[in-house]
Image (tube, rainbow, N blue to C red; front, side, top):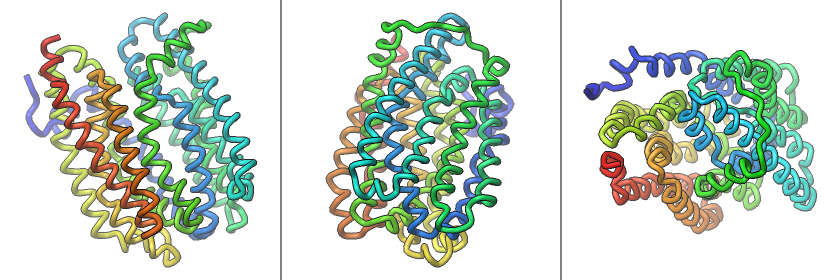
Length: 428
């Protein structure tokens, strides 16, 4: 029997899923609050040039994060969720995935080191780039997909909150001037490394996994099974990370600072919905595996409260952009007001995109179709991005991003309708 329209804000919160979401919000509050509290300090102390240099380095390292992830945060989460009652299969998935990620980390290092050494703009800030590389190591080693698939995110979120708290304190202790940009980069990059180490120590008490020596075939199967999903994510990177990266190459670190500031504000508001997607993804996998009607009801219960709330958040960002920028960064970043107003619609567009891509298309087996959507959107972004940057600098990069995020959900919705996802599932 379907729940009434109140969905996640009513009867759902009396279920185990609702309690899981509330627990994630309670613990992950620090994960969202602390970066917001430290951002104004970093923006003022480092200045646009120093902060922009770190953001520029992070945009390059995000390509390596994308490569080492290879879509495992979605595919491995789903595989773990479906195999949760089979310890041997869990061990095979875990160790095969970790081995694949370590191989990708090695490949990333072999690519990044020569690139930073050979490009003059990178070589000038090589220490910042080297320290930002820690975020790649931490992202690779942190098995969030494993805990998410087993719905053990509360303990992991606690570890993340502790590491963010350490970084929060360290920022005010060690970052005192624009000359401390390397130290600031280290403080921003270390939480994921520390979190990975803590998870390695605590995994036996949180969610034990057996020892397993993956074969070459196991690792090859992990790569082969994830190829279409990786293409989707790589194509998506064309309009997420490339915008700030190309903006830095064409317009300098000041423009990157403006773009990154507005982007962080918009993404932080969208990330408020993160615990909901984390908690519901494993349940969506089960619902799609059962029947079309059940999957349809699950998606509707998720969409009815989320989309209106996301629309309201977007409206607030657009209206209060001057106040937000003034409070967050001060007068040196006044040019970011227009950039934030352009990006204000992102919480709504990203929520719609996450719902259609992660909850529906991945669980409906449409990874290949999703890769085509992201590829098309990425190409559109690459075509218009240089032109808009030349004409409008950071505001142009923001307009290109918003255009991509608008086209994406439209194409996803069309693909879902063409494949008759829920009807096909109900007939299976």
